[in-house]
Image (cartoon, rainbow, N blue to C red):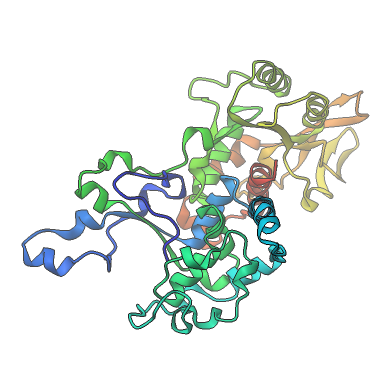
Length: 414
């Protein structure tokens, strides 16, 4: 099913949908590979493409802003514009305006059948794209209720290509996101084939590269160096398919804005100088982080900047904490849950994990705390590999919650 194409030029840059590991040479039905082999030519270069399963493309679409809310907005915009265009014609021709499909109806049309189930056989005997043979199971679809649909301008040769024309009124990425709502499409391959363009000399191979572009990435600004190391490692282990969408402050030498107060000042500075990067300021789920987050919330941040805290977790509602009266169970959310608390806290040769209360935050009326032996928990996490994670020997539930929180903020409609 063809979503979009380009001829004699590169066209839309789809590299952000893929990673370098997706660069492959799938066999193409469109290329006469047997002929090329007969001529002693290697067809691989003509078949070069980026290939990724739709289920793995969806998280990248979301980070690019193509969520279901975006799809619905685009459909409503297309419908509104088309109606305005048709109003003038209807007045001249005295024709009533059609009752266009609601987005819910269009969504049902787009997700009612899996792509693989649609017949792609070339209908050579069909007279035109309105024939029963081509329309197949869509023969009863009220096409006049689809905005921008023009049966005389549509070229279809099979049931699948006819379906492509019906849903092709939206941006290609909106179509992909909508098709993903049918679970049977999860394994369908999204292919960006560039080999023929390069072979024909219309483009160079260097123009086709993967990963999120710089303007599409998110800078995650944290309180300290340990946060950076933990989050980068967590992304590489648990979310490798989207890790390239996130950047961090360079802490190879030292953290230039270490500490809660410095991170807040950094945020205030960026907000004043109109930085265009997408930035997320991440504060710890402790007393100092809560105070800084509240202060940041009172600022007028540009749309490309936002502040969040590490998520509150039920696991922290009753957590061992040591104070003047000894070790007691306490709720450490908004009090002592720095990022180290989200790691696996079961270490051999160490006593059970506990927080230690340090200083009193008068403004909030609570004590600030910190995890005992936090450096040891960090070192243990940084030793984890995809194999140890897959074995289930390391508890990843809490650090997964952190990544989910960050991703949810980055994909939230704005």
